[in-house]
Image (cartoon, rainbow, N blue to C red; front, side, top):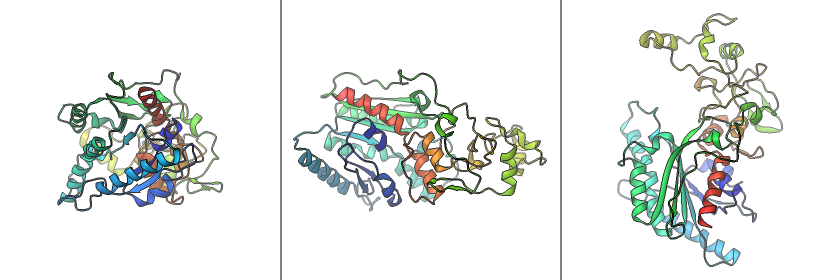
Length: 371
């Protein structure tokens, strides 16, 4: 989100997160005046008896200092603030219907409240605009949903707010990524109703996988590009190498039952098919199609056993690299993900990210509304 908002011309003062390992990756973002956004590594919940580690008061102080320093540096008295809220998506995803421990249930409930937790900061700092992004399921089906409650509170506080499910592919992102985008505008700044666009009218057609990543050096499973440590492929077992070597680009994994190496179908898939009568998880151990969109880039995007994440090139029998996943998310090619040798952590950061191209589009929409 920060990278895209900067591309749109918004000066980003800082970002809040509670994962220390993300700081080095985050602070390489650079504003037009050469400054880097601050990384505020704190817990956004208020400190309460049930949440003793809450640090919202410290975040509030950090925001005040950042605003004061910005005004002093640029010699201005007023700024138009924009809040961008990207709460964890797990509480709103469809694939969460598993038995959870009491501790995990508490964390999920807390995570679902992260959006509404920001309302206290919105009331205090009164941003001119706000944008929130999350998975498709966040929009909910009733006014009692998290997003419904958030909207009602904003309206009581003088904000126009609208949320829609959009597909990032209609904004130049080379993947089929459906997400909820919400935009709020202070009625004192923009008196009309805000409208969330569903596509970039200036774009014609989609950006394909090969257009996004086809120029990168070819790699084998387990290899790393000596000039780009983020272009690093996970090693594969001999059995999985046979599976991917047999996979056609863009096809399902039905090929597994009839490969040059025999039937390579997974035993667990056979048991599931016998039980349900239908084939499930047909995208795992399959290749991308170079001439089509990528599927949604997830936190497991470097693993061929977690979706359609094998390279489309038949000469490259491997999963995606963090660099390829980042380009499919529309990050600049020079953007580095640290630690560079930790493929899985890079995948988590990339999969959880808002595509910068999408953030830039909505950043520009916000600028047009508040100016």
